[in-house]
Image (tube, rainbow, N blue to C red; front, side, top):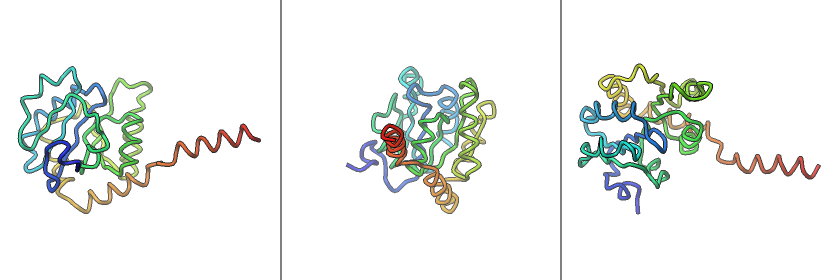
Length: 184
């Protein structure tokens, strides 16, 4: 089954993946609710978090999938052309491993402000854009997202830069280092 069929979406349309981690993000959900109807012909695959699902499930349409949780993130990443998400370490690692560009909104209360550092690193590498949560505005955010999605060259280069940041062999490298120390 293709990724598009998994979510009952069209494989030929641009797709924005919205997620705020496993529990969702109210800030991302509110912004998405305010901009979803201004995203022209863009499909939206939107994970709200289970606690917020009932608040946003009415946005479901032919081009918008609203889900409490996405079990098959591999298919979600494969379908997406751009992500709109938080900037936690696992999210950053997954985006880079998949070569998916993003619009990152760091969680302001994250320990040691690590999500801002993560988002800045991705942005500095050209793999993402960062929007501080206090600057989220549905109209402006929709404009930025559409500008990125409608510029194939920008998307291609951002995806390439994201992929270059990925470390798909990280586990093997770590195991090899450990074994090297244990055997030595």
